[in-house]
Image (cartoon, rainbow, N blue to C red; front, side, top):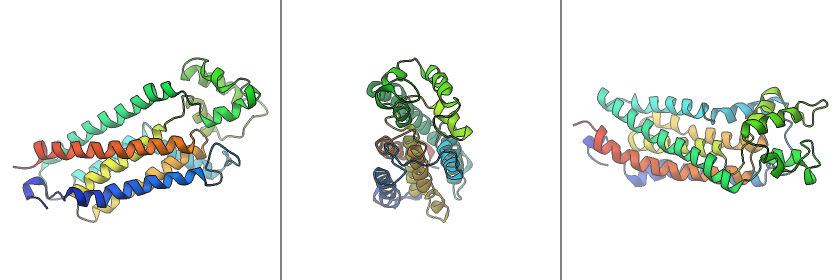
Length: 274
């Protein structure tokens, strides 16, 4: 332990045991998606995407997206900064530091994946590959390469909408999942949802493990099954492959540890009470 001025933070070793190792162990469970029936989106059989279970997967997926993940993060941050024994100014300093780092790391990492990594690798989504069929003989009437050459995501979405809304439908989808397929026409690798969910889970858990020793800490452990569920939802919805979520999740864990390291340093410099 360090002094009270250092915020009663625990040692790095303890934080890694409390939060780092559980986060890594959760990531290892991503590997099961390669072998679990109906979860591997690269081969049949697939989940029926009109059923209640698939709708649950859709909402879990949304909770880890660009709107859902920040809401989860804000709720957990509130649990952190409202703990007892710290002053009001310190609460605001901690809030500012966590928000700044989260915006830079989560936003920057997502932008890097979306606009550089994915655009360079150009790996089609599994649902597009399935809809393209052998040599473009599937419902979209073209190869995956030709589909992605249509234009930007909006143009591809309009083209895909015409295919999915044909009668009879080429694939049974609920209305929300159909809209999700139409929206998600970017490239596949790596998964942005898995990156985001595992980043916030790792980053916030490690901060909590550094400064919380009460029962409140255990509430942060719910972030791990949430991040795992978000990641599993992506291949269930057939918009990502197991390798997509595995690499995206590993990115999230790694950047979460880096973000925690920076946050801990900034807390010591700017947030501790005199």
